[in-house]
Image (cartoon, rainbow, N blue to C red; front, top):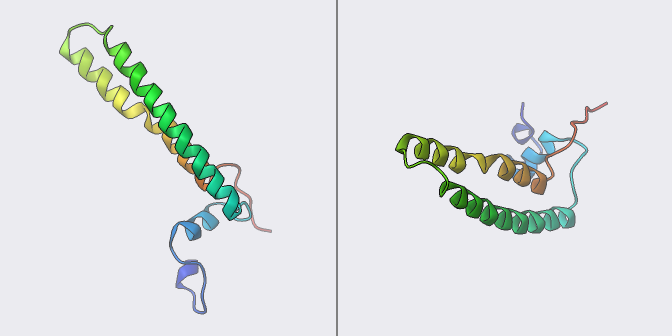
Length: 102
């Protein structure tokens, strides 16, 4: 039974509850999470702006053949998700090795 289904309390199914279930014993404090969120927001916005500038600059060098341009923009529009996902997980404190309960 999930922790939020137990009688007498337990953690609700919100973000904190999922965080605790994802990495038991590796929960950052509130101040650390707030600072991580601030750093991740600044790094994400700056990184995304640089990524867009690089993608647009590289697009100028593509051949004028629409299938090549379409494939490039599909790839460029999707690849930013990989570092953004890692950054969001890091900000939430959900990266690192899983620890097993003894």
